[in-house]
Image 1 (cartoon, rainbow, N blue to C red):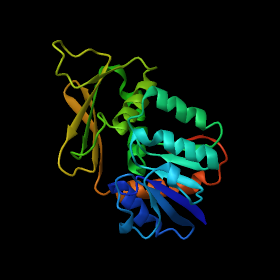
Image 2 (cartoon, rainbow, N blue to C red; image 1 turned 90 degrees about the horizontal axis):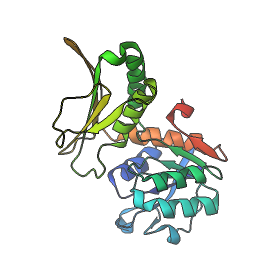
Image 3 (cartoon, rainbow, N blue to C red; image 1 turned 120 degrees about the vertical axis):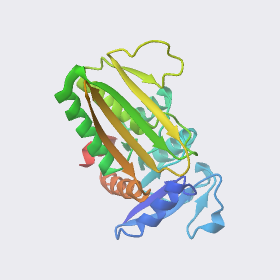
Length: 250
């Protein structure tokens, strides 16, 4: 039985993961961490901080916030526990901390746990290779009005994957409200929309002369991310150390 600790259990994704685990016979949720959650609303131990945790876990699934990273790494390194990080918005310093931790424990990091989104990324790479420099590329991402980071980690992952196909020669431009000039050939435009209860939508536009090619993905339920996260936790449970992503799991 793989024992999972859910960091951010009181949030939308935390609750979806807790519900999704019930469908897996070999996975058990042993507790959660959430400074804002009411522990009485759960049938398992929920702790306000990492220092309060008194259960053993094989893997942490994290869908919280970047400011929780210190506590997550402290617990994981002390207990040799794998961590599945789906939180986005980390600083460069925090990302280095994650990379350093992967030398001692197994770390799975992905900005989006949807199989469909990862297929979209591969399709965008193939389109970039095929269409080349003659097509302008714009990325539009849409999320609910409670999302904190902008642009989304997924939009950045898409942009980085495309940029790799152009030997990292592209410049990312976030919106154009402070621009007073024509679009440059080497740009990848990235735009964020926030509103309502949009789970997540990403459109990648390849815009050429007299035609527009759009590759699009829309998540209609958070369950798709929860299923991917649980499968990643299962994958991670057999690893001792190293840095892993959705591509490794595939």
